Image 1 (tube, helix red, strand yellow):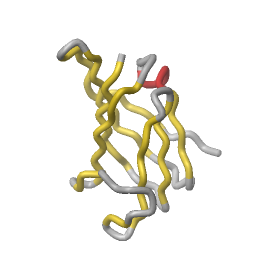
Image 2 (spheres, rainbow, N blue to C red; image 1 turned 90 degrees about the vertical axis):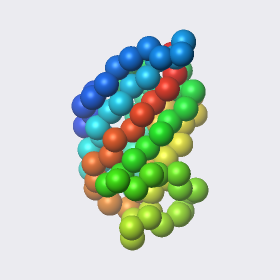
Image 3 (cartoon, rainbow, N blue to C red; image 1 turned 180 degrees about the vertical axis):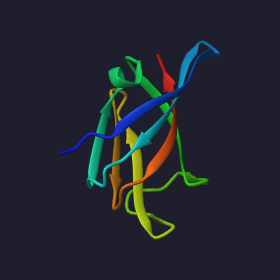
Length: 95
């Protein structure tokens, strides 16, 4: 399974939490996992995702712009289920 490429765009401490913004280039693998430590965090509390200007708050299996995208976090990993290769900006909040 190919790993996505990560490019950190912003790093800040706001409101007692660490905030990170990453540009993530997906390879088109149906499932992708990125560990919190690769995002310069120990714990993921929340995520905000965006793809091509469309907010990604999709339930698993939802269709946005003809693509199935689901993003979730289990406090130690970000996990995507996607049907295509894409570039996505993701804001990750944690510590």
